Image (cartoon, rainbow, N blue to C red):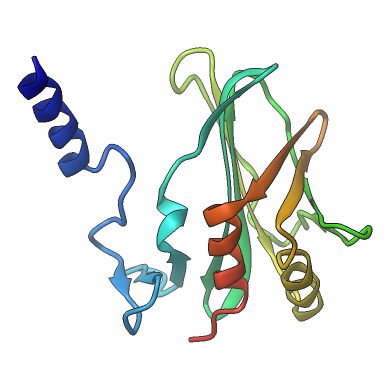
Length: 181
């Protein structure tokens, strides 16, 4: 019985089911950052290796997965936000809150990529994903907020959802906000 469990666990790990950096990404200078250039648009996207992992949790809305990562797209910092739950948020705003009323509010602008809304994956669940481009001032403010031990985050739209970022997840965001290629 132990061998069966061990073999199943080994298969999951080797198949990347727990999350792994996709093979088309390349490591940058032995850091925690991986980049990929789109072969048609030549847009380069760089992400922290932890951005490829999902963070499942439970809450009053049921089982959900949320993810906030900081990516670098053509040398500009971008917040990539993902909501996967059993109801729609229709989020178009992300709020980061640290201690001492440090607050950064990011709104999706018309010129930016629209929130992707994918229904029925799996049946009864929804996925919303959006990219929020950061100005230099927003990068500076977010770097100050990420110095806190924990950061509160709200996805806001027609509905909202709050969660806390701390530990390794917060550290990977802090690493990317300060990363320079």
